[in-house]
Image (cartoon, rainbow, N blue to C red):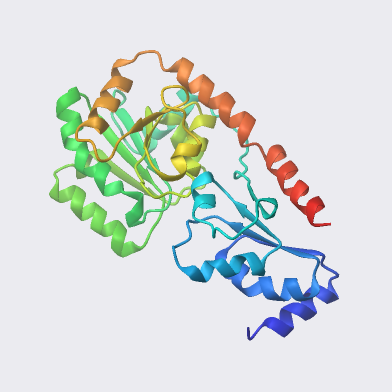
Amino acid sequence: MTNFIRFCRFIKAHEIDIVHGNDLRVNLSWSLPAKAVARGFVWHQRTLLSTSKFWLLIRYLCDYFVAISDVVMQSAPRNLQDHQKKIVYNPFSISSVINKELARGYVVKKYNILSDCFLLGCVGRIVDYKNIDFVIKKISDFRHRLNKNVCLIIVGTGSEEYVNELKKYAYNMGVSSHIIFTGFITNPDKVISSLDLLIAPSCVDAFGRTIVEAMLQKTPVLAAKSGGHLNIINEGVNGMFYEPAIQNDFFDKISFIVDNKDMVALTDKAYHFAQTNFSSKRHLSNVLSIYHNLF
């Protein structure tokens, strides 16, 4: 509210017709000024909303509500009108396919990994709800049950305290020598392309961006059957689910993937699915239709 007048003046000075907020803080800061002096405010919601009745105010703070997935839309306030909301999936670069053999060679050399290792990967922000500790816990059993060399590559950053906590957990589990924390890297697609399997273990993701990134690199995906993952994966067609609540289901699904020598059909379908549904061109078309609707 302290910036209300400043933002109103900014909108008027630059003759802005539509304000599009892509972050919760931005939405809360700019919605009222936009409603006051612009022609429309678009509230773009990228995370799950809580059950607080406070969010019922969103209907009056925006002219259009955009959610990035079905599960995010389901968390939206019920008083939003159908003509006032739409699901628009996040856009991706669909032309950055990396040669898998070259990517594998690069990752094996860079991180000093045995060439016959089965490479698992978790990619994204390292926070507790991503459930990475679940995968770390399973590495030892996974190695013994499948009798394979296994390496888990964890790509991403998080608080130093939490990352160190995970490293200590891996050490205590006796698997730290089989886990690599890469930290931030500028081209995660190269690592994703090198993997034998990308794991998405979070049970509360609003979408699951790395799943689509893996599909675009033709890397098989195993995801927790929950949240925004349900919008992306068609079980057994373009990816695989495991039930977090069912004991051994994680191992059973990985065993199936390891034993299945021909995953090409699945990864090809995943690739074409991602190309069709998550292109920047399609995203642009959806957003422009919202803007035209507001005019």
